[in-house]
Length: 358
Ligand SMILES: NC(=O)c1ccc[n+]([C@@H]2O[C@H](COP(=O)([O-])OP(=O)(O)OC[C@H]3O[C@@H](n4cnc5c(N)ncnc54)[C@H](O)[C@@H]3O)[C@@H](O)[C@H]2O)c1
Ligand SMILES: [Zn+2]
Image (cartoon, rainbow, N blue to C red; front, side, top):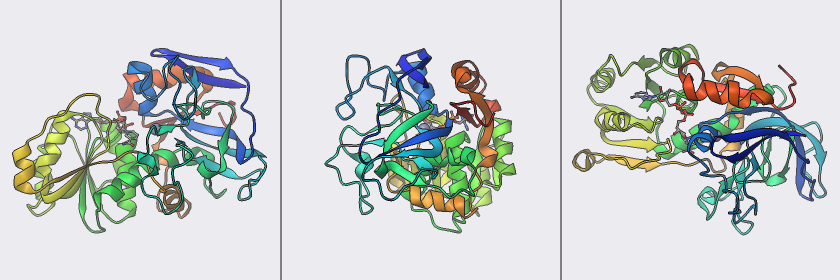
C-alpha cells in the first residue's frame, strides 16, 4: 500500500510498503481522511522530535525512522482481529493516537495516562500512521463515530480533543469570557469548544482570513488584529474593565504570552497550548501581584467520548475549518508547502491516502 514515510528532517517519501499484520485485539481501518498537523511540520522542519531517529528505536513501539506519518485521521473498519467485541466491519471510527506502556492504566477512570513515561503518538513514534491506505490499531484507541458525521469532519476530532482538554484545564465556566491568542487550527478549535460550552470568546490573530473564519464559523464574538488594536485595552473594554477570566496561548510567540498576562483579570488562568521550542520569559512580579495561574496542557485524556458527542449532537460544526483536500502524492508540495509558506491562506488541509473523495 502507499504511505508517507518520515526518514529525516526535510526527507518525507511517498512509497509502497507492506501493510501491518492484524493481531488479536486490533482492527484494520481503511483511512478516509488525515489532517496535516503543526507537529508534522515541526518534524519536517526541525525534527526528528517525536519521531525516533534512525538507530534510536522508541522504547515502547521498538520502531525508528522511517515511520509512517499521520495522527489525525478517520476511516472505516475493514477487518476485525480475534477478541474484538465492541467494533464491527463497516464502523466509522477515529483514533486516539497514543503509544503508551502496557502497564499504564488507560481505563475510563484514569486522568493521567497521557503523562506516562515515554508516551508517544501513532503516526510519529511508530505503529503505522494515517498517511497510509490503512492502519492496524488496538481496540482501546479506536472510537466509533456515528455515520451522520461526515468522515472528513471526523478527521478533525483529534485536534478538537486537544482543544477540549485545554479548555478543561482552564476550569472556565459558562458565561465567562476567554481570550484566545492565535487562530490557527488549535486556536479555532479551542474557540469552538469554548463557544459550545457557553463561554464568550475574543480572538487575537494576525491573519485576516483566520479572523474572518472564526467569525464566520461563529466561534468568536470578537476577532482583534493585534497589529492595529491594543488588545489589552479592548479586552478590558469588553469585560467591564475587569479582564478576561481565562486565556489560551496558541502561537508560541512571546509577545502573545505577554499580552495574555496583561489581559487576564486578577486570579485569571492562562493555558499554554502551543509547543515552545525555546525558553520563554515572563513577568514574575505580575504573576504574583495578579495571582495568575499559568497551566500547561498536552494531548487529551479520556476526552474523545466527549468531543465525539459534541460533534454528533451538532454543538460543534467542524466543516468550516477544512480549507483544502489533497492527494497523498501532493503531501509535501501542496500540503506542507502551503502550511509552511502561506499558512494565512489555510486552516486544516486534509489528505486522502487512497485518492477517494477528491
Ligand atoms: N499542547 C498540545 O497538546 C498541542 C497539540 C497540537 C498542537 N499544539 C501546538 O499548538 C500550537 C498552535 O498550533 P496551530 O496548528 O494552530 O499553529 P498555527 O501556526 O497554524 O497557528 C498559530 C497562529 O498564531 C498566529 N499568530 C502569530 N503571531 C501572532 C501574534 N503576535 N498575535 C496573534 N496571533 C499570532 C498566526 O497567525 C497563526 O494563525 C503549535 O505550537 C502546535 O505545535 C499543541
Ligand atoms: Zn496533531
